[in-house]
View 1 (cartoon, rainbow, N blue to C red):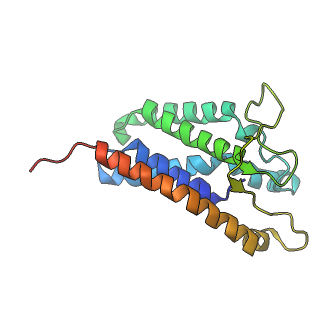
View 2 (spheres, rainbow, N blue to C red):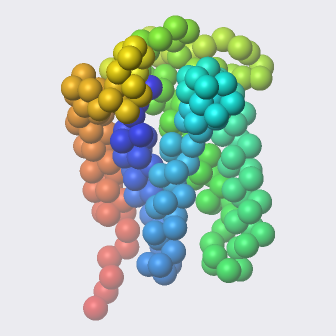
View 3 (cartoon, rainbow, N blue to C red):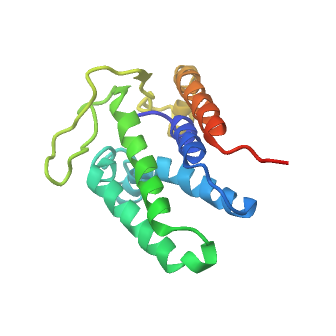
Length: 191
């Protein structure tokens, strides 16, 4: 799985591509919403820790599915539509962006050379329990099961910090490209 750093960069990229307009005060909540959406499928980690004492027991299952992305996008659409007059935004657009960023998490996880079997994610859950992974992987996986080391120390290991650096090197240029493309496509202000 990519780290939260990689998923957050994907959320930032999605925010840039969304080209939010309107009040600047509304951009920060949208940025927060989209970066949270890009990380949301990993809610199964604290859930597994709380319920079963194992952070990875439910990881890459139902929360890493297209069905979950559709559900989260639909719920966002409904909530934003309900509050739309206060937010001065359209629920459909926000719902689609949230769903897209949620899906970006699933896609990024499918591009990881998975270290722990079964490899991949249950992207087609509940229709299939199979784990799907891309035949070409571009990200290294995080090493988190170093026994006796503790989860936080394992996350901050030199090997994992190099994996996070790899994510930054791959994803920041994509985000920069998105910024350049959207910047050029915006109408220029006339004086």
